[in-house]
Length: 143
Image 1 (cartoon, helix red, strand yellow):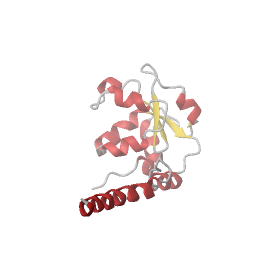
Image 2: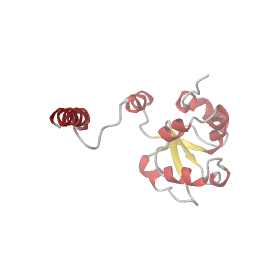
Image 3: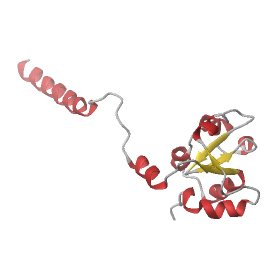
């Protein structure tokens, strides 16, 4: 069974949280202010979490969570393959919804392949081996 994205049940989770208002909207700028061990927030699939009191209890260590504090942690959260139990655990740390979050756009962005920092590396990646093989064959026949 594939774990479902957190965004599928945002409304239900807010209802289950009790003290958190489902209408609380938090900007990326606000999340960015909460990036220390004493005050750590991040967002996952459009839900903002205050994970300050969970850092020491996180099975993967507090460092991995602090690396994402103040940012979106959706990709990292999914890459690790968290269990349904971990997803349920998140609920108690939710403090609001991320302003402007669009699940469709987020899904599209995560489906795009990462761009190469070398710009045009695809052609070079093909040509270099071909040239090396050609040079090795030529050397073999000429010697």
